Image 1 (cartoon, rainbow, N blue to C red):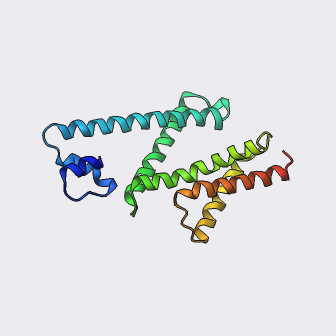
Image 2 (spheres, rainbow, N blue to C red):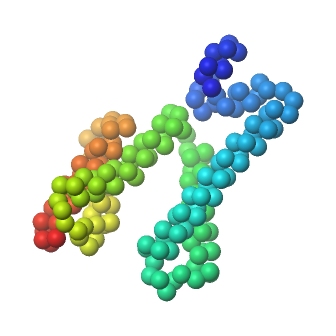
Image 3 (tube, rainbow, N blue to C red):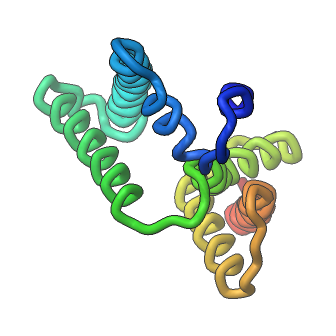
Length: 179
């Protein structure tokens, strides 16, 4: 994409505006085909994501007695509504950086506890104690709160920060309950 912008000349747009600017320069049927391809790829990804989230919710979070067609539809609608809310919030709230940077920062907050759980499982060969989800959620909250209170700008290193808090909280929790 950046090579294309270098070839056509002119000012290089912001990362979030590069595709839009490119499509606006096309003529004829090419912009329609391009936009249809992007929409098809996005909808395919959204469909797979919603299916995976619905399955995980029904199989891992809810008891088996709730696995009915009505519950499946309710969970699917709930996840879809959450996605719609996130998209609305992202477009409505002002931002100062590119979408990819925001996504990578958010990924640090979501994958940090998972990385911490993995590291903890490699360090201690014990089964994860009951309540691990809540321990990881508390570690995530403390990590984010301290990052804000201390005015740290960790950027993409937030995954390491959150993972460290997760390992520490899991170690304390497992020692407290002798897991």
